[in-house]
Image: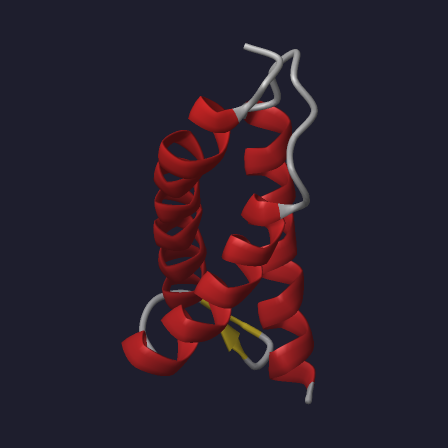
Amino acid sequence: MERLIWIIFTGAVIGLAAELLVRSSRRLRGKLLLWCGLIGAVIGDVFLGEWGIQYGALYLLPAIVGAFTFVVIGLILRSIFIEPNDPRN
């Protein structure tokens, strides 16, 4: 249970940081990058396994790599599907 809490925390921090870094004058549609960070951290932890720095029950590198990868994918998808259709452009 402690491991899941740390995975969620890591993904949320990375997702929120990405939301703040790419914030433009337009209002973001939902919390896409937050969810990408959360999902990426969980998937990174599951598929990349146990390597790197360990903090408590969490291996940080797989969660960070997974969250970062999914945030980048979310940014690409947002630029393709959401921003071109924005009527405020």
